[in-house]
Structures are given as C-alpha cells and as structure tokens.
Image (tube, rainbow, N blue to C red; front, top):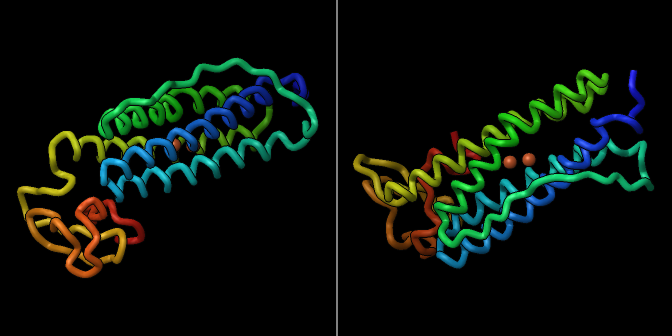
Length: 197
Ligand SMILES: [Fe+2]
Ligand SMILES: [Fe+2]
C-alpha cells in the first residue's frame, strides 16, 4: 500500500479543499450580485450553498491532518465566473457542480480507493452526491428565471416570503408581502422554500 505522503490522494484532497474554498467565495460574490438585483431569496440560496461548500472544504481539509505543518503543491484549473446576469451565474454554478459531481470527485474517489484511502474515497463519493443536488437546484432556478416562472405561474401556486414565512396562493407572487411589507424578491415558490415539505 502506498504511503499517504506519496499518494495522489493527498494532492486531490488539497485540490478539493481549494475548489470548495473557491466555490464558497464565488457563491458569496454571486449572492451580492443577487442582492444588488433585488433577488433576495436567490441571495439566500447562494449563501446557503456557500455554507455547505465550507463544510465540504472542512471535511477534505480534516483528512489532511496527518500532514499538518507541511505545504502541498498542486496544479489546478478554476473557473472565472463574473458574469453579469443572474441566469448566467446560476448556469455557471450549475456547470461547475456538474463537473465536480460527474467527473472530478468520481475520479478522486476512484484514485483514493485504488490507493487504499477508503475514508477519503467515501468523502469524495458522498460529497459528489451533494454537488448533484446543488447542480439540480441551480438549474431549476436558472430555468425559472429564463422562463419567467420564478414569480409567475400559469397555475395556482404557493409562494413563501423568505423574510416572514407568509404563504401566498395565486398565479403570481405578490409585489409586496402583505405581512412584513418586504418586496417580491423575498418570495420563492414553496417547492424551493427551506424547511418545508
Ligand atoms: Fe462542495
Ligand atoms: Fe456545490
């Protein structure tokens, strides 16, 4: 069995830590963009996802504990996602999540398994599944913006105000929340609302 010091897994864990750390920052920067455009619920979703990327970063980083004090040199390619519109930012995020889920973490998991680092392998595989959920959520939001269905629907739909929790039923989100008076950008279709099932 290969030593951790000489493994590719050591490098892949550092690459994953770097990638997750950047994803976290990209999403907080995208969240600022959403806020600027009055899309407060989408701002929340970016921040919520950013926190999960932080948790992934922490998990990968913790698996490097035995090498504390060392420096690991790696190469890597990282996206520049400074697009102006929210749908472009959401589509870029979707693309990156898909890459992680379909390619990068599968490969890192397979290498870790081959090298005999089973805990790292399962972290790569498990986190890949979470990135899949991220991918689907970003895709759904992008599609809603592209088709103008984030605040409007052809049928009776329920929308939640993410500030106060008020639920509105109708063909569109109200321009202003009748309870807390926050603007439409706080509303989200109930299927995307947090802690609701
Ligand atoms: Fe992640
Ligand atoms: Fe993610």
